[in-house]
Length: 229
Ligand code: HEC
Ligand code: HEC
Image (tube, rainbow, N blue to C red; front, side):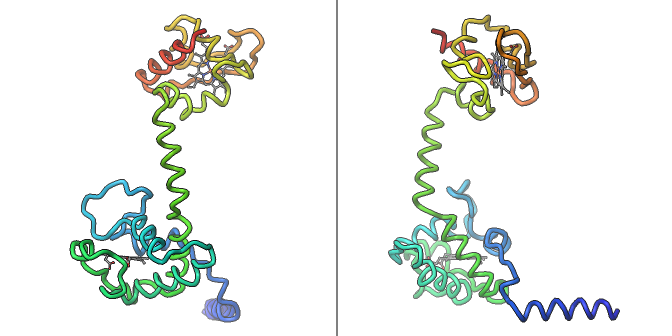
């Protein structure tokens, strides 16, 4: 018993002498405190059963309206707004447009459910994670990936191109060289792996039987054969 008291006392003392010791993790907190109403995905994976605007929309919107351009304005405008709004929301303060406010209703106050310090961590995480530039880049990268042939998408996702390149041999024969092989043999090698068949390549080609479906293996094989010179 005395031991427990001591531990509690030490914990309290350390807590008081330096309140920075408490580490707030914005990412965990936003999941716990905000995800039941706001969809946190960027971009949102669904718009069904929405109780609130997706967090991405909230943050993009706030940054636009507050005309935030510099990093240090995060502290002067964005964080205090979130800290205040979550505890004392009102139609007057909301930057949400009238139509959305009507359909969602004003956000219920989260007073007692989240502290000011927790909100600081949440707001800071929101500011960094929901970044317009980062979002655009992700969308462009995704569009570029989806524009690739299906076979190349599978090859990139499964790390084939870590060993093989399209035209140049390195640690593995190039796909252009492999393209001349028999279709069935290509499919079997992808499924079962191989070693020692090609002169000058000592590395082992791993088996992908458990990682790829039969259809994916056929798609890969057809894509490799298309690259035949
Ligand atoms: C019970 C559901 C609910 C919870 C929980 C909730 N919100 Fe909201 N929130 C809403 C609704 C509804 C709106 C849209 C209406 C409005 O702007 O008040 C909203 C709007 C907002 C806005 C936008 C205000 C504006 O002016 O556009 C911010 C910022 C916000 N929420 C932050 C949070 C944060 C941070 C949390 C977690 C600590 C959270 N919310 C938890 C329902 C919720
Ligand atoms: C760890 C490196 C590595 C990875 C990853 C890898 N390969 Fe290979 N691959 C090799 C090597 C080395 C060979 C040559 C094996 C030999 O000589 O028997 C090879 C050979 C092949 C062949 C030769 C077929 C034949 O019968 O001649 C095909 C087809 C092939 N790989 C396709 C793929 C595909 C598709 C992927 C991704 C799903 C992939 N490889 C991933 C290293 C790799």
